[in-house]
Image (tube, rainbow, N blue to C red; front, side, top):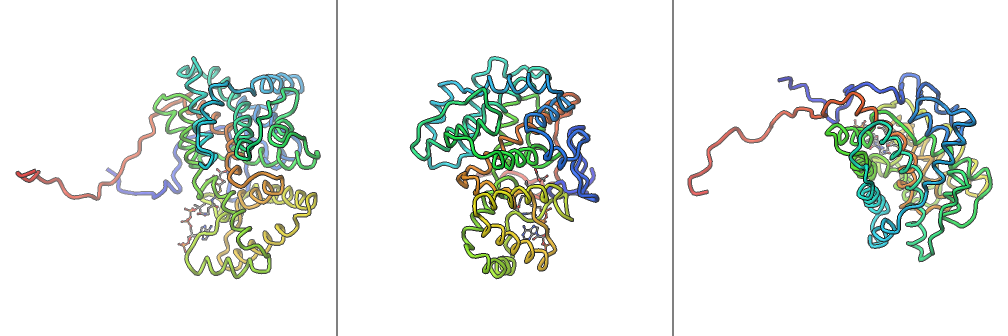
Length: 372
Ligand SMILES: CC(=O)SCCNC(=O)CCNC(=O)[C@H](O)C(C)(C)COP(=O)(O)OP(=O)(O)OC[C@H]1O[C@@H](n2cnc3c(N)ncnc32)[C@H](O)[C@@H]1OP(=O)(O)O
Ligand SMILES: O=C([O-])CC(=O)C(=O)O
């Protein structure tokens, strides 16, 4: 047996995928062959979701059919709302979302149908319904009544409508949509690999997504977008950012929103998201957070040569859009549901149970003492 242990599976190529390609040498990320920056510039999130699941960008007619199908499925059942309403409202919203996906699975009579067509239909249903749950939770924590989804609105417009009762300026919608497109897919990241591992046992797609939500919640992964904004609020004054960061590094602490397992020379998505964040700051008078961003980014580059990752601009951009911090990782879920489910379908197309080996380091085999 090989004892070549790759901690964290770093550098291990675990399988093939045709969904996205991350090329750290050229700082590039493509979804089904299209550069993500170009998708963010010219496509709707619905078109990108279609691309991720079906392999091609939709033409106008296919996009209209897809958007109509998604719009019509946004409502969740009364029983899902009832379960969600019983979850304590001091829990993290990711806990609630995980529970909601379990409910969606339990309610689906076709839960165990793992055919590609059935799983695509379930993926589309989750894409449509998860924003309804996230918005409901956002309002319920403030003691506000639920706002029903509007099937006539696009993905981003409907989500703001369900959260705030209004649809913001097109520039805000665009920044939000850009974040959804950039967060949608990123090859074998920890949560996607979790989803694929669950799928590899021939479990159902809802179980895979539930597990992926658990993996995304951690601050080394999706939870970092929340931690970034908490850090910025704690620092408060951009003039204090550099010394704050250097103190953390001196104490050997990690600074959230920096570093990446695959990209060592900058995250391909950051320039696009940073530009969207700056647009948000200009729209809302939030330039203080841009100054904070610049200070932290420069100090980290000088001290450790480590670049920001996507969570670094996404966190303050969501803050400026008016979302509460614990909601930031659920926003990530609303996007990554596309990538996760595409990977589950791909895993099942040529499945092999995911089960690595371990090198045992416990005591050598021994006899049970007679008195035991
Ligand atoms: C959408 C996403 O999920 S993107 C990732 C979001 N996560 C974060 O922002 C959390 C903060 N970042 C990190 O913890 C890491 O960079 C990870 C987990 C993302 C990737 O880590 P790995 O590839 O395992 O690298 P690892 O953690 O071993 O770091 C390598 C070196 O860089 C340092 N380093 C990496 N990231 C950071 C950071 N954010 N702050 C301070 N030091 C860091 C490590 O301390 C280590 O230094 P050392 O060699 O002197 O011990
Ligand atoms: O790829 C990773 O390890 C983490 C990441 O950036 C993502 O999931 O978007």
